[in-house]
Length: 366
Image 1: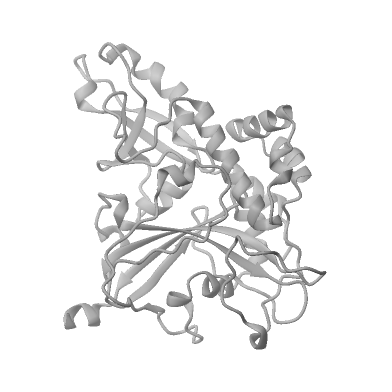
Image 2 (image 1 turned 30 degrees about the vertical axis):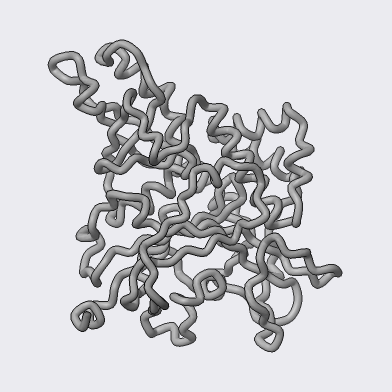
């Protein structure tokens, strides 16, 4: 298997979610109400980038005055800085096509969402994510900080317009990848506790590489026969959001698979060595549900503390139901280097959605 597949990357860049966008009933001023807008949302894009398409469509029915545009799904305000594909994979346990969203031009929920006044806000959120990824990979973000303004503009426009070739041309100068075939696990005898991202880099040729990963973890409750029966997410407090790095080594050990990477990222769930057993997470202590969806952290400048720990909110054992990356539920034995090179987003983070379910036998016992 090729480490970098141009065909796979084209599929990622060409991936889109069919959206059916309804105007909220409180903002309809005409009869009959306007039909929903049908648009394609790029998987690697962001909801505010759709506003230039949607606003003219509904303009004739809107009341006077305007506010910041925002979207919701089943009443849940959608985080504008999370890629559309990640939102879809995370919130639609059973894929819904078209995906029915509601658009609002009034009543921005500032207690839930960070303000997003223009496309520039989205651009700088993306650039800051790129800085974070660069810091994880290289130990600094100088390459991003030193980008010429014209390159920064062209990089952003390549994302907005879905221009993969233009993106690859500019991003190749940032020296953030790809990951080579020599992607190994650390030898068991030399295993160390997970290194925080703000710790000093290892000196020398054996310095491990680090891959930035964003984890979105959703507990779907008791064991379900069908994911379509998963309860609707009505609050971001029900989603755990974790930034972690995977260390890979260029010598010694065994080749790293996605399964190995998940054991590094979430040892509480994927730490079982028997691939035929269900993975379980046991809560420790009296933890309450906690989410790290801190808006201000997301749009802040590059941080030194990217490893964010969250509790999973359940004291009952949970099983890893499935993993989604770019809409794919991958085989865990696939080489991790292939996953990183071909399925990461343009911000150089690998975005992983993980669904957990509570063990039925334990649920009955509590």
